[in-house]
Length: 465
Image (cartoon, rainbow, N blue to C red):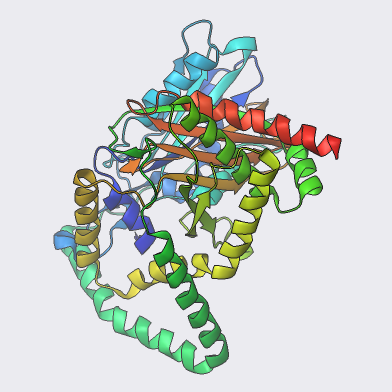
């Protein structure tokens, strides 16, 4: 039995039937499709490496503490690994519609919080694997780590593991859970004592971290001022749309080399251009307009790779959609990201998250549910979109002997945010997965095309010197 972290637990309490808190991906593979049973067997051989795939969430009686992971006494792999096919011609339109429908459905909380769908009948003889994982299980980085575990490094399938002897541990009773939660509450003062001890033993480092956190909080406060009204912000429903744009990593690196900054700066500038095109296509004025994006930032150390949980903080970036010139837009994004890194927003976000570990959980859970109820009723203009960038493996991966050609991500959206973009790199390619609210964002393809047009424009400018 393992207790969820405060951040992991918050993703459960943010979910309310409209805001779905699962992350996902659509992996495209070369054909021909393998036998479905071989896919099931390949996943079954890797399941022992990821214990969380066979665990369920149990909530504490009377919200005495954070939920815990316990072994599922009724685990059946066949419930989670599923098989479907696209209607012909099995092109981009049919795939994005299927992805949108699957992402509109919440995961069953009585089961381990994940699903995998093998999808056949794609054009060119290809097939896909759609993977859906609740955000309480993993962040984007951990999600790519999970993918690497399930897939193979070589075209020849890995040898099937010996017969799995796993047996679920005894399911804890409500009394056991309550006693464990009470004991955890008693341990909280000890955790605070440990924090104080670290402060006394490293005062210089602690003061430095405190200054960074205070500076980050101040920067946070400045970014909570409402932006100008725009159609990207407003009420959403439970249904989703999804599409994607693609780029070559070498092209993005060439743009970075020519104009300076980082690969992430180029990516944010491309998304800014796509959002500008979407707003202009809607007939909205963009002069002096910025689109404020929540930008998740991984705080996972190298030693924490392979841990399937959430280790993220966040920054808030104002994307300058008012700038028409692609080069000037990139320069503005680069300057802003340098300022945000100096502001230590990510440090402040990590401190806020860590505070939950030494705070009684019942008021936190109540507060999070109250916030979601308020957001459903009152409009917010502080956050307009979300853009999350996750580096993936830069080498080919295989499943059942077939090479993965593309890895396309999905990011959830929450109340007030109608469009979000997830970015993942894989084996020399970059994919921009665009999520939209079904009713209020039917034009997310305009954003995706704008991203790809922006790449062509910047490459042309780079070539011209």
